[in-house]
Length: 176
Image (cartoon, rainbow, N blue to C red; front, side, top):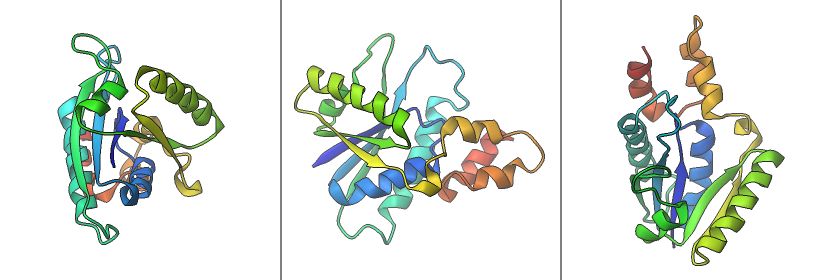
């Protein structure tokens, strides 16, 4: 089984990583995909930087002792607005995936993601959404929360708690 794990990943967080780690045992291939929305010009990191973060994550995950089976983790992107825009289910089908991975932190996430899963099923019934619950220790972690920590004195130590270490050096160079 193959899956797409889409998101803005601005930046990828330990919460995203925890969901990915839950999904790894279930799929032979996972494509980490940046959903690009040109109508959101306030991204902290550009597309190439976010793809570089995902390549760091993919490399680390594929060399992890946690993976007891062969799995391939790919990295990609697709536009959700503007020229060439795709629905996530269409992108999933284009990379041979049969599932979309989504993480749930709380009840609000569930309501939104459940509605999206129903819409996606209507758009392409061959692609199914799989939900993973975030563990309590990362359920409050979001990309916007991480971005909000940057700036005050000592921000480096605060942010380090919330993003994967394999991307820390790249993250730090881009922010300072």
